Image 1 (tube, rainbow, N blue to C red):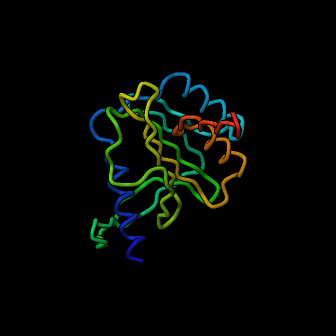
Image 2 (cartoon, rainbow, N blue to C red):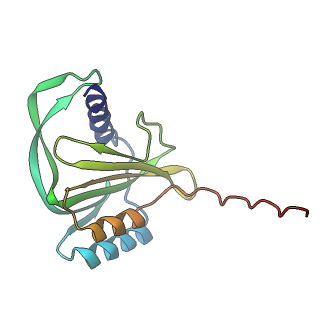
Length: 168
């Protein structure tokens, strides 16, 4: 239980850590994400602003108790938008510099109402990173979920070197 509280506290910090520099993802990524979302969920709302891309469908407002880094639960609630059991909420933005957050990324955080996948992927020029925050309901269409996870930026690891054949 203590670990869950720590994870939720980190998630709350990470979700608000985007203060300062934030920019929308490149147009090619916006087009790719939009096409993927429209293919699987034509009625989804997609908005691109100076702060980034937000795509959502089937969201609602939840009353959530904040948690501190020590695991203490605040007696006051705050409102937070999130997906219903069949919905999703995707946020992608560009942040300056390398990711220096406390959470290990990528990972999926289990909140009180829905899971949230987070990741911080270096930009192709490595002078910044894409901040990805993907919350989804327990019964989100599996094809949509898989398509989004394949379309959002991912860490690209160098290709493994092949071992020389024996005797050569």
